[in-house]
Structure formats: C-alpha cells, structure tokens
Amino acid sequence: MAISSTIYKADLQITDMDRNYYSDHHLVIARHPSESDERMMVRLLAFALHGSASLQFCKGISTDDEPDIWQKSLSDEIEIWIDLGQPDAKRIRKACGRSRQVIIYTYLRSHRVWWEQAQNKLTRFDNLSVIHLDSDAVAGLGVMAARAMRLQCTIQDGSLWLTGGDQALEITPDVWKESQLL
Image (cartoon, rainbow, N blue to C red; front, side, top):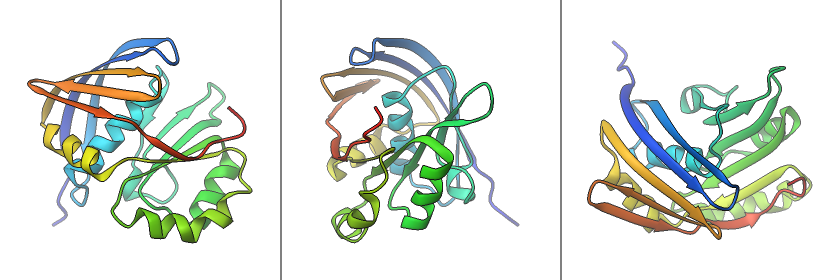
C-alpha cells in the first residue's frame, strides 16, 4: 500500500520590498513521502521569493512534467517554472522551452559538482536563473517545519528574513546564473 502525502498548512505573510509585493497567503502544502522537511521548506521559501496571486505548488517531486512551483498566465502559458535540487540538463532544456522564465534553487551538499558539470550546458539559456541556498540556512528552514505554520517573510536588498514562532532565520540567496530576460 502506497504512503500518501502529509498535509502541511502555512499562513505566510510576505513583505517583499524589492518587488513592492505585500500579501498574505494561506497555503496547503502536500509533502511527498520521500520529501524531507528541508526540501518542503525550500519550496515554501521559493514561493515567498516569487510570491504572487497566481503562483502555485505543483506535483513536483512525483511527476516529470511539472516543476515544484509554477505561475501560469490566464491563457495557460507557463510564465515561471521553479525547480529545486539538481535537475539534469534535459529537464532544464525542456523547462526553458516551455516557460518564459525558469529558476533552479540548488541546496544539496553536492551542489558544486552538479554546477561544474552543468554550467557549460546551461549558459545558452537566456531565460534561466540558478540560485544556491546555503546548506546551513536550509537546515535552519527544516527546523521551522510544522504541520501548522504562521510565518512572516521580509525580503529586502536580496536578503530574506523568515520568522515563525520563536525562530528567526536570515537567508541571502547566492545567484550563480541570472536570467537575461528579467
């Protein structure tokens, strides 16, 4: 018998001074049985960094045809495709062809090896951004995971402050490759 996803709920207040985006989101996150707390919280962090009314979580880890998060237009075109981890070049090429903007958040310990192998293959994609999250920060995110979360996220000058309960975390994403189409 297959193990089903675990449901997490997050009330996320986003104050993004870099993009002038201020909104409250009431999110339901399905955590796949093979997904760690850290990975789920990286999804939540990516959502906060790109927050909008039309951004949505996808099947992600359980399907090859969808990213972890995407934003679609009213005409069902993919505007933003967000993947986590270390996707292979074939998946990234497919995403870049299907979406206006592709963002990869890498956070695993073997990130340097992946980037060294993939970097030359990925430079030709003008709509691709690759962003690294420090492993210590990701571990801190994992500690904040709970079935019911109330989180406040403030983004300013490229840094993110996330608070929830009695825990606070500052994260500064490291941009390895920036999209030329921004």
